[in-house]
Length: 293
Image 1 (cartoon, rainbow, N blue to C red):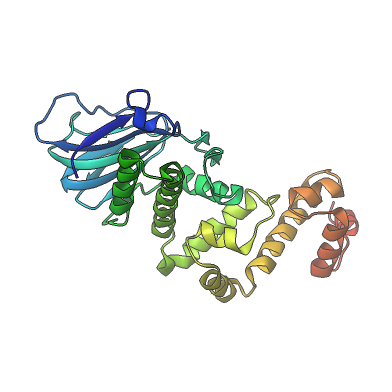
Image 2: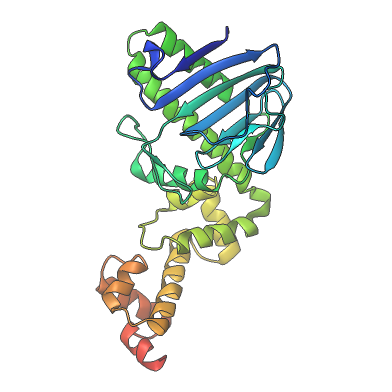
């Protein structure tokens, strides 16, 4: 593939895809001083290294990148070369402009994407952490990049649809790998603690088993088996126990109404909350509050 540089506003090829800020394949054969200072840029940047060895920095941490490595950089992260310039080598970069992407996990791609809102929410949480931005030996990214370049340049029948599908696929492929890297199945106890914290931080959300499994980068069957083995409960019963635990805390430490507490902890009605609470504790929420001032 020949090098190319596509920038929004500078090439007609991207006019119909405003969510792509830039898409480039650069072969660096000569060093240019001050060509890559450490700085923040708009959007989400995905890099794929094809040739050479790059010493790049994200915020205050340096990373060595080799052929077939990928790098994910979020808009709140400053990124550039430790030397201030790009080393000799070759890499591809796709810069996306989601409608919303914040460090707190708020993430929306835009109307162009076919990803369900629930999936986008999980993608946002994974990107919001981005504690391990390098994906080593991530060869799956390059065929997708190459196909995207082909669709943009050749513009065959249906290319608009295909480009949107490819960007969704690229993003999902990267984020799945990030999740698996962050949550090593061999270290599930630590992963389990992170999962519980994620659930507690957003108990009002109607979590499904699929969404919870997505947070730790596992399929639903493997996830359910690991949760059962680790906690003794199915994922949904485990979640209910967390909801009740938080409800008990709120009943003891706040004067919020029972209805408010029910919704805060993810129950769809105060009646559902009361019946579940009594089943698991032996008390109604009102009696529990009375006996635990």
